[in-house]
Image (tube, rainbow, N blue to C red; front, side, top):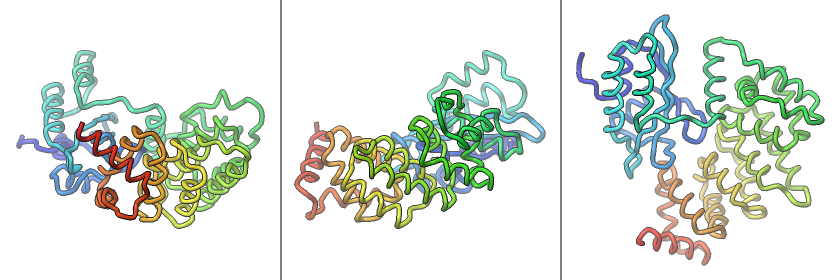
Length: 343
């Protein structure tokens, strides 16, 4: 066996078929060729969270069982993958299982693999999203929770939503383009109670949405804005639901309006966490930072520190630190940021 120096090299040498997903902010496929470049430090990790890469690795050997690893590896200040973590993890796997990655794990081996600094347990919603994605890829049936959810969406009245399962929302999201599901979701969206709406929006974060549903979500935002006291959490969830859709002018215009008329910590967190691509627009980035500057200093520091690690936003944000046209409030917030960094 030749020297193993990357995770993809290891999985290939072990004779596995595998695929990679990012699980940081939402479920996203990560192309093998791109990850190989990341492993060679030829490009930064595209979706850092807390200066780490959060990965799901799905693999199997021919006609063998399917396995999942959930791995978190640190990134350096440039967003490049630090090679020590993956190498140490692979050494642990080889020591525990060898190179075949097959057979049943006994309790001692399973505990040894689980007790290391590079594995993590994903949030329940991300686990449901990944399970739904893989089930569909493998042509497996949806969970038993999908049918009750569809029945509820057809007539969303009363308290029946308490019995709906999270996995049903993830299964529905994976099938959102199906001709019997898309109209059902679009029609029910204006009438859903908040707990159901929030669960639906969370599930939709990880899938590409048909234009009809993107329009229905924007319409529900309009509906919420027209209320006497719009709910900031509802507006934030409706924005988050569009996380896997590419930026487009209509949504950016809506975000601009929300930032200037109904800014809230929930909205700022939603944009920074799920829609950072929209902030590549200079006008929207300025509106976002101005709104962020009026919140608590801790939130400004937290979100600025996260966004500046994103390769697509780093130069723009660093430029904002010395923008002569920024407001007094933004200038103070940036000054406080420098003071905190020097403390």
